[in-house]
Length: 310
Ligand code: CP
Ligand code: NVA
Image 1 (cartoon, helix red, strand yellow):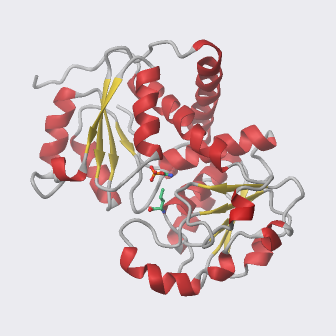
Image 2 (cartoon, helix red, strand yellow):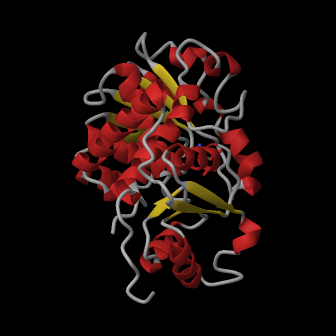
Image 3 (cartoon, protein in one colour):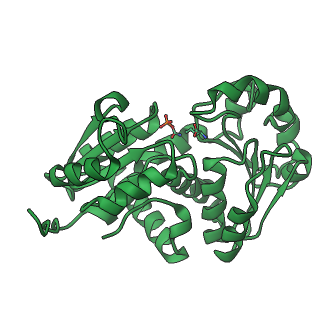
């Protein structure tokens, strides 16, 4: 059985298959709506953190494909607190055909997958945000017509979003650079993983250097969910890494600006850039739904395997 836990787990061919499927499902949806390939299929959505995009795009994605999603809030499940992760996983997978989970520790989503008899999708962990990166490279290829040979520059915290994007770039032949303050760069082991996937990746603490001749400028919040206590300290360190008009001026004339959202306007990105001609942030947000439909289709369409014990 296939799960979707991390971009680092994929091959280039698998990433390509997800992108081709996303393109097909997006075109189909725009034309006359999707075929009900997930008729009577259900997705349990476990959230330990808030969400707009992930929750709604998975919910609507399931609906468009003929299935149904069930939202389970942090308080309802008490993952690992009210009940062990292994037991939650074994029980939930008797009811649903797929599980999407947004968790704090990445180990929690891998543990869910270990015990699940249905596919598990990572809807964000502290380590990776693979659904986001899939939508991101899909959006880049739509706007710039290719991925191979592009320069993708990320500004800010070397976090889950940056890491998944780096792996997705590595798998698709785009060069990746992460501009972050010292102490907040992506870790060396992740850079090595990206290089092993075939990537040309680097980190720098010079945002201007990273922006020069870039095709894509990307940013995310400076303090992620779970890092709220660090937000004030980080707000003092990160301002040189803001995406503003001066930074965009260093990039290629047709460069696109991306943000996974939610944005802190005036912090990691200015209003003028977010609402300006280079910004593709709302196409990017829409593409979460199309990219995730590809994941749902490739993981969940077809007959359900019957549980050995049921
Ligand atoms: N980008 C993203 O994952 O958004 P949400 O946190 O709103 O789901
Ligand atoms: N890095 C952010 C992404 C939010 C979509 C976080 O983990 O909170």
